[in-house]
Amino acid sequence: MPQDSTRPTACLALADGTLFFGRGFGAAGQTTAELCFNTAMTGYQEIMTDPSYAGQIVTFTFPHVGNVGVNAEDDEAQDPLAEGMIVKWDPTEPSNWRAAEPLSDWLARRGRIGMGGVDTRRLTRAIRQQGAPHVALAHDPEGKFDIDALVRAARSFRGMVGLDLAGRVTCAQSYRWSETRWAWPDGFGTQTAPTHRVVALDYGAKRNILRCLASTGADVTVMPASATADDVLAQSPDGIFLSNGPGDPAATGDYAVPMIREILERTDLPVFGICLGHQMLARALGATTIKMNHGHHGANHPVKDLETGKVEITSMNHGFTVDSQTLPQGVIETHVSLFDGSNCGIRMSDRPVFSVQYHPEASPGPQDSAYLFDRFAAAMAARAR
Image (cartoon, rainbow, N blue to C red; front, side, top):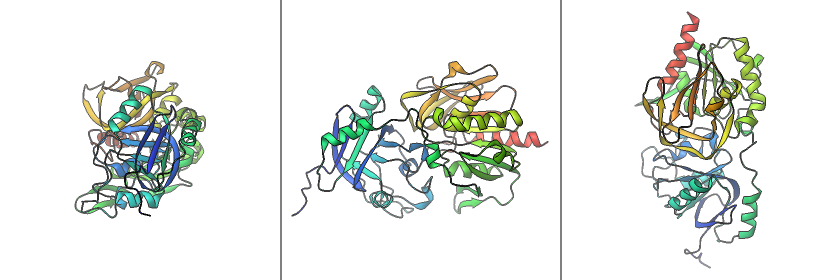
């Protein structure tokens, strides 16, 4: 029999029993996760492959998703780490010279579920009002769903609080990184004459962060999240980088924070952290982190530099934040969100140790904050003099 084209082939069930029906694409199957929304107008492939989205399904508020296809150069990790995606309009055939395959085929091959035909504005309002919900997403080409089972699955999802996901997405062993940022017309380059050595702790590092480090002249060694201070210092680094990543910083901090504290106690090395790395540096310095209502996810977030008065438009992806009221003496709050006043940056008052909550490497997003990589490189050069 021909398939009924009017019958929904995807269902999103929220833990409170709210249901959304639409058209499935990508892989068939079922998954549970936390639901968030992202306001970026570009970069859906980078978002889906950002390890910081592990354990989450992303609702895209921008309707044109899939129109430029996908290509291997835009992956921020080897595979998509987001559990699935929700969009307003079904993905169209790609229309871009860089496209290697359609989004739907890419998702199916990578085992990730997509759902189109959804009122994403209504869904986004629900997330903002109620907080990031626990959900179950199912795609069945025949449109057969056990609604009660889906709601139960959503309610059984344990959530992000207390969940260490960095250990799941980190690299299995150390490796060197030399690829530099993409530039027209040659694409990615290679760092062949490094001037300093950086150890990057991988809590879920995006590739473009590593490219930005290499582009400053760094010989980058990427190390697993479980690396010890002895492991790190054995590389004789000129600086330490703490990467982005998913999950609860308090949970990852159980093993990462003691290592960061030991680095700070044993050396005067420059330290730079981004996103989860920012949160864990703050915890290592004595601050606490808290879960946000719905987090910050997008490429249009205004952040104010409290020390210069400058406002930067930034890319963000985080569901936890540093509680600025708990920052100890000697740790200065440097940046705040102009959306809600939450903390977006810190530095030590007497050492070249600093971090930001947002993503200066963009991918996707603006590059207003790319200078932070140069600041890190300058701190390493100053120490070497």
